[in-house]
Length: 276
Image (tube, rainbow, N blue to C red; front, top):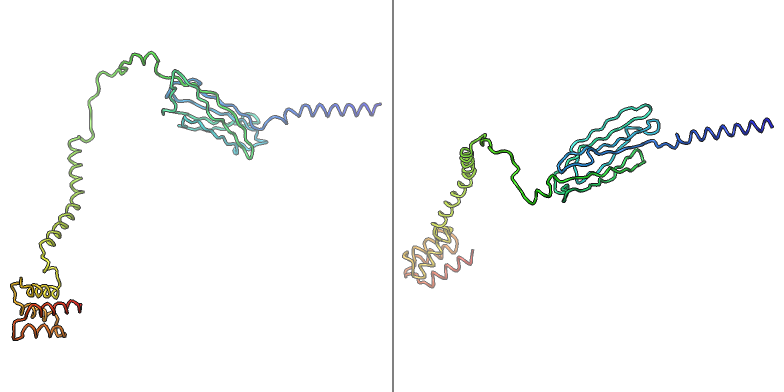
């Protein structure tokens, strides 16, 4: 009986030890708490969001703890992260300053409730999710004020307007700068117009090559509407053709005993043009 009693007592002691150790072992390595200040704000007021994460450094590295937030439609104007030891634990505080002056944050009535997206806390491959308290936004305008709008400005006398540079002087400087920028394009335009004017004044004969000009004069002489005689036109063609066969034919025709007729001059011109 004595041995059986000792075994029973040992079993009870083990059960008691396990019962005392179970709560400590079951305690999570990371705990958290969220808060908003203030919970009720007017449109345009800044709101402070705070997430306190308590970490057991024996089980989780505090440097590995990350938080993921989404405060839309508010934007994060400032962020602060502080770490402080609290006994055997480490408390990490994530503080955010939230601001919103866009249309999406308007109360659209006397007041409105905004619910931010859940806060995610991660460390390693573990994730915990928690929620932010609701935020109530109130309008700055009383509904009774909308029925009788009045001027609310208390500034009766406005200060005198001052300038770093007087508008008249600034306008003159800008005009001079614009003229300087246009000077070079204007010069290019003048040069282009002068070339077009010179080209327009140039006659068709002046734009032809010497041989083309001689053949044009020969054509006019053959047509009978050129003051130069046919002999002079033929001699000019012969001079441009040189000692070639066609040049010799043009020279013989120019100084033939009889006056060169239109058919002969036209035939020679055609032969020269066909020869290129």
